[in-house]
Image 1 (cartoon, rainbow, N blue to C red):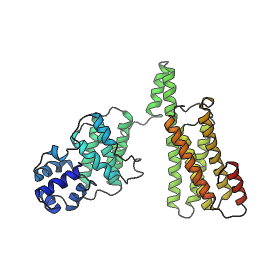
Image 2: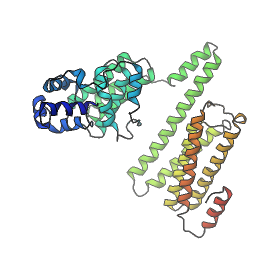
Image 3: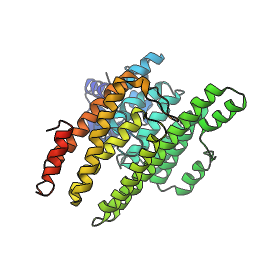
Image 4: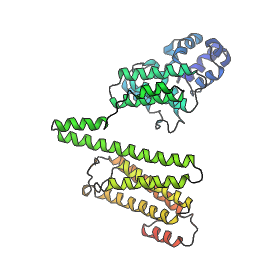
Length: 374
């Protein structure tokens, strides 16, 4: 049973209403309601009073998470809904309700702490924690961060949690604290993998050095493209009249960047294949919206041709190579990418079929016939 189900069960056994239980432990009735529906969880300071009011042990309260093995945590994480940090917060509250009781039972588990911190800050950013004061939220964030900084060994995870904590401070108006925590992140002319490659090269461990060099390159490529995407989104958001056209300039810039990576060989890994072709699919739709039908058709053909090239790669992978990307996509990734490309092609076809301009309809028809699409 979940903690919410346990609270509801033992409250009813005691004959309490939600209001009566809330009054006993000094919280709002809305808090109790959130707990019982697993859309929130009691704070650590409320656990003992809650168990006492229900006349049960804390072990009974958290019965479904009082386990210690790594396997148990892995099972728990299967119900966790993964989300990019700060870009989407729909499941943060349910994720938090899932993970928080586990952390209470295992306060030295740095991975649980890291996930709890991310979810809590997501909730703060989304305005989903109105029932807690600013000081309570800061203390809770710092509790998770302290666990990560004390017990985590992976430098990248530690750095990311510095960033997440700083975002939490910022969302709560503590800008000086945010600046202070960000200053603790090492700023170098390369990421950790790059400097590990430097050391391996100095030690004449050339295979390891090349592996780390390629991984570092892929990481930088990913973040450069994110910056370009963000700049385009910002232009569109702040200029409702001309923003879409400005955004397309950035998307063309990103497309040139991705094509430059392709010039480093004739192989592109699935992550970059996905990135390029989801970009092209969106460009087709946006150019149609802007009335730039020639560009929409050109980008659609790049999308269709890219899919054909990827299918050819799947048939003859041994003939393809890349200078700076690792050729290590798994069969699952390759099949998933193929399915994604199919969906992007169908989406582009759907949008092109909405074009009713007689000057372009023959070009679109010819394009469909060239790639056997309808």
